[in-house]
Length: 285
Image (cartoon, rainbow, N blue to C red; front, side, top):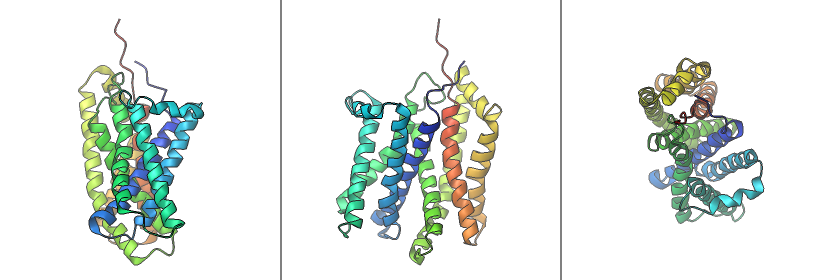
């Protein structure tokens, strides 16, 4: 059995940046839409599309022939890649128009664009999980419902980490912004618990599956990627922020910074773990 080597470096950073950007947008704009509070919305309007665009640039660079990327939209009826390309394109167009409206026209973007952007952000966060989930040749990935949900939950958690980091770096953050971020940290407790449950379910289902899926689990739990999996994902990316958000009542900058960095490390490592552990199903003779 062979570990896949098609998806690697730049693609993994695309998965992380696009997911985090979508998470930032969902959290900030969702806070405005459903809680009627817009303290975070400017960060969502600006950083959401920018992070997704940066990730998309890395993806295009990985293709080797980025100027042929427009061909990816030609078969939306038959190709998951075409569907994903359209989602990314429309999300970025919608987002950059909102940035233009906010920063240059100095007025609030239309509410309809918030709704459109929110739906497209969900699509952006879940698309890559769906793309991996339909790859039947790699059984560890072939979870077309589980993986998109896991990627969405991770995107929201990484988004909270990024918003925390931006708030820390911005010395002029308003008290309302800090209050919303602290509330999101409490929400992140549930996100981390859900992410842990989904990850355990993914490993359990794969370990009980065919030999290729079981080999993927072995790679992560006791094989060559065990140290990053346990150290960077489980301990640093999930358990550490879970403890900080649950037990620590102080909101010192150092604690918030540690929590934000841990969440971002967890977001990167989750995607790296899933991609690097993909084992091809042996071809039948």
